[in-house]
Image (cartoon, rainbow, N blue to C red; front, side, top):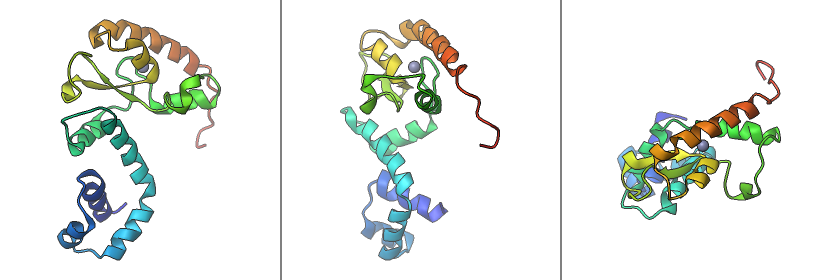
Amino acid sequence: MTDLQKEFLRRHLIEGELYQAIISKMGVTRQELSRWYEELKPERTVIAGIRMLWARKQREMTFPVFYDWYIAQKRSCGYCGITEAEIASLLAAGLLTTKRLATRGRRLELDRRRPDAAYDDLNNLTLACYWCNNAKTDTFTAEEFAEVGQVFAKIWQQRLAQLPLVAEGD
Ligand SMILES: [Zn+2]
C-alpha cells in the first residue's frame, strides 16, 4: 500500500470524507480512487470490522478516535492474554469449539473494565476474548476478574501446548 492509498483510506473510511473533497485535497482523479477502492478490499474489510465494534455500542466517541485507540492496542485479551491468532490456531486444530462460533469467538470483543462506566472513556476499555467477556458479564470489575483471567490463561497454555508444531518457513 502506498502512502497516498493510506491517506485515501484514512480520509474516506475513517474520517468519512466524500470523493469530491478527497479529489480536490489530494489532487487525484476519481478513476484512481475507484481503482484504489477495489485494490484495497482486504484493508477495507479490516476497517469495517473495527467500525462494527465501534457501532455496536451507543457512543459519544467519533469513529476516528475509536479507530486510533483500537489500532494502538495489543491484539490480545486484556484478561487472559490470548490472541486472535492463537484462537484461530486452536480452532483450526479442533482444540477449541463453541456453538456460538457463528457470531462470537473468533474476534476479540470490547469490554468495559468498570462495567458501570461509559463506553466513551477510552481508559475504561479493553479488548477481551469471548470467553472472558462472557464470564465477566456486567457484574465484575477488571480488578475482581484478574484472577479468573489467570485461570483461563493457564487453560489456554495447556491447549496451546497440544498444537501440532508447524515446520519452520511454512
Ligand atoms: Zn480472555
